[in-house]
Amino acid sequence: AQSVTQLGSHVSVSEGALVLLRCNYSSSVPPYLFWYVQYPNQGLQLLLKYTSAATLVKGINGFEAEFKKSETSFHLTKPSAHMSDAAEYFCAVSGSSNYKLTFGKGTLLTVNP
Amino acid sequence: EADIYQTPRYLVIGTGKKITLECSQTMGHDKMYWYQQDPGMELHLIHYSYGVNSTEKGDLSSESTVSRIRTEHFPLTLESARPSHTSQYLCASSEEGFLGDEQYFGPGTRLTVT
Image 1 (cartoon, each protein chain N blue to C red):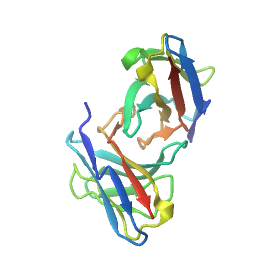
Image 2: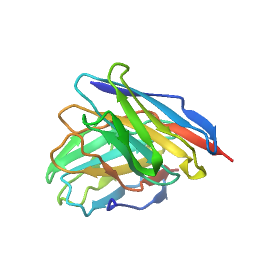
Image 3: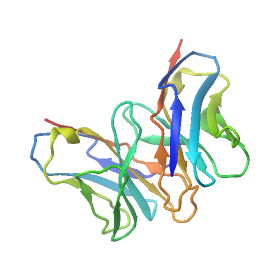
């Protein structure tokens, strides 16, 4: 069984500030971890994924995430927020044999000018 | 860029109507999925398919049904829509093989049943 917990349903930052979105997972097998972004009235777009190679994963739009097995975490960061980063962000895990993704509840990121 | 399409994007219908939400992908992916998404909630898998003539129910019970007659097409049908079916429905697909393969999502259909 696997699950994802995203701490903070809403995060607000100023433009230019650090973005930190938290994700903790539970998995009975080595996990594959994903971060997706959803802009209003759109589907989900993959930001980055961890598949047991490097623990620091770089994604699109300047985002990166670090896999920490000891903390069962996969937090998403970006050094400097841009107004265009305002969106909802979902963390997801897969690791069973059936290719299904389990999603967290999402974190809405607001960027203030 | 993902090539997965959903129609209609928005649909408002009355109770009791039969509806079909369309999903098509041009990537040749074997695996396809339907998710239900409510505001402020996680995506819930309601159906998935591993290939033609293969369909399975997901983690969230749903009164909808699906079919997979062609690789590229994975429609979802509600025989009699009810207000409780009001939600956003997202279709996705992924490649064969590697568990770490990401899912590609369509833009979604926002369904309102009055």
